[in-house]
Length: 334
Ligand code: GLV
Ligand code: GLV
Picture 1 (tube, rainbow, N blue to C red):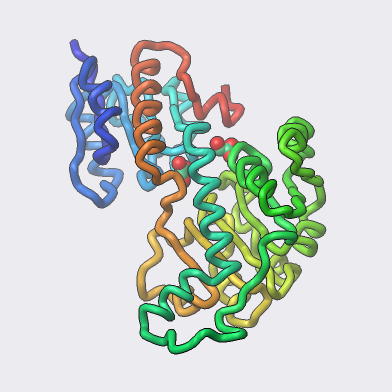
Picture 2 (picture 1 turned 135 degrees about the horizontal axis):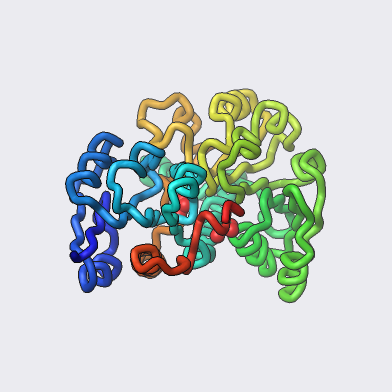
């Protein structure tokens, strides 16, 4: 029989086309995430061989058990904290993700937030739009210099390295932290004249004008930034999060912005996510806070590449080949 693939949301057409050439493809067209019962029912009814999901879909053991034929779950994201990898490994179900292709695009967005926070561009735009621009002002909307400042990278992986590489044109100092020193990454940055120094968490928090988070969400990184960390940061410092909302303790961040423990925050990811318009954190925007709706990888080209990669992972999984980008392998479970 022709294998069946269930896709929980419309992903870019290039990925769907590839899948349709080989498989029976059923795409759920609603915009909001399905609940798990709906995904289970669909997988069961279709006897699905493959599942393409988004980062907003929770895939647990019960979902994985819904169709006895399920051989692959392919997420349209680099992050896989929404998938129970251990449960997939136990069942011999392959899990694919989309690392690499979105690295530079996500680094670009991180810099958009960095520059917005330092130079108050969102606040400045709101000022003009509100008709408050009456005269040139000697101290109007003065912000922080980016050039010559110190960037602290938490997690010098692919994205963290791409963010650090962009400091070459800004003459910044770079420090980074993580469980291990990364000599390979340091050398890669050294090649473009960026000197990245490995420091411990406390040093990074104290020394950085900008702290940028580039770790996956795991038990070890959950609420990595909490009250103690925010108090340690400089009172003018900028916190950037383009990783996962759960890496930051939202209540502690709210207090930090309220009491001036840090200067500003730029968030592309939040906890909760989506962040409702009436959430208390938003009372700091746009003066102290800039928020974008999880659009780190959202360039047209990159989203197309992600769709192609998600399709390639499905094909490999259904054909019983090693996935081009296996989350189980990347998480060390295989
Ligand atoms: C986005 O956050 C992703 O994991 O791809
Ligand atoms: C993502 O691709 C990362 O390793 O940072």
